[in-house]
Length: 294
Image: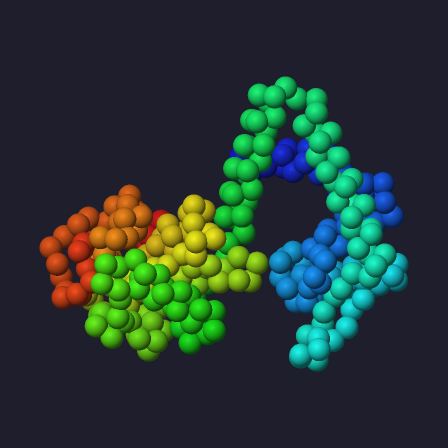
């Protein structure tokens, strides 16, 4: 598998021109050209550029200095917050970006041109699949404090979605509690899923000593669904629970959340008799593991 990934990387870097000193026959490296593209017509702040591209601050600074020296961008403090540095294209930078965009289009067309119509469809479909899978591989998961602004964003999104999808809406005050104090060690764990530094999902676990642990607050953003994030969150929560000595996990869910029900069943959760009086639940599930979760 690793050998295939490396072969794929080699042919892609060669075919897209990543090995050329002058990308797309212009006086820029691939990194500089990509930076112009990401800045875009509206401009960007340096932090979001760094996070979005997954680059360290030193490399981003070198790229921006090079583009500044070529008079393609300007870098300055934000009008609203002097701590934030914004990047904008100059008039020359906008022209250069348009030229690079046109040449990138022609490079893509040259890749498709030698293929038959059927081969083109196969290649584009395969590329879309690879894009989804590589995006999924870039998602990071880590425990954070539930009071963190990123956690709060996920929890607000979770509440908003349940309120829309449940037949009678959802009032957290009527539901079994999952307060911040219950979701931080040693009482529990709050797990955040993020992509390019942005929160896209969450899940939590409540510990009850030797009693079964509860899986709570499972949510994935619409923008990230179909990437397997929910399953990864569930697996990671089980691993966290196993590390704390938990061997049995429980959860309850509403019949409106059919995709969640399918996830739990396919992950080894078995429907059991109600074990609590959650007013919004229609299904109760349990899973037992032997040793650390896989």
